[in-house]
Length: 212
Image 1: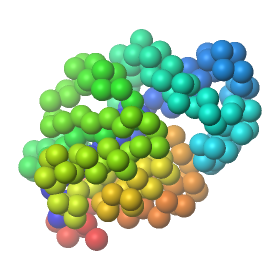
Image 2: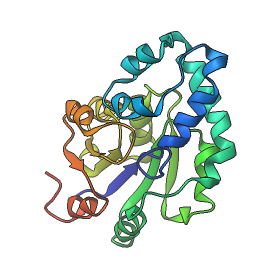
Image 3: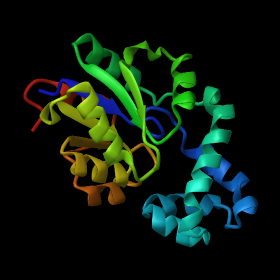
């Protein structure tokens, strides 16, 4: 049975997909790439990050600065975001059953804590952040070491292919949700232990005898 659940923030816990698209479009002229058209959103969801950047004609080397800029602008709108419907009840039930819960995200700690301060954030025991969007495995390993968590007792819940890749490198189980950024067909490429299509399905995973 899992004793620790680590949850991603963007897309998994909060409905931030369209805010990020808006911010990306706001920055298109500054970084010299093509804006994301509405008709391309579904297509982009099935692509890897590198493939998306290629379609947008945005050089990969610009990504670190672009992500940093998005995080800064995100802060202004984070208070307007909505929590994914149904997930609070599932997380609250897990907490009441003794689950240790935390957040690990590529977003900034300031943005996350600002949001949690307005939305019953006391259910989370910790917040960790990754320095880069491809650095979650390093952040996960650091978290496990600092907190003394046994790998087999930890479940990470995310919404992107890179989340599954980070979990595999870190040696922990992964549940990928289909309501976030990446399309299910892309998520399947990560071979997660669990594919979650409704928040309520997390309850079944966290129940005794459901961890394998």
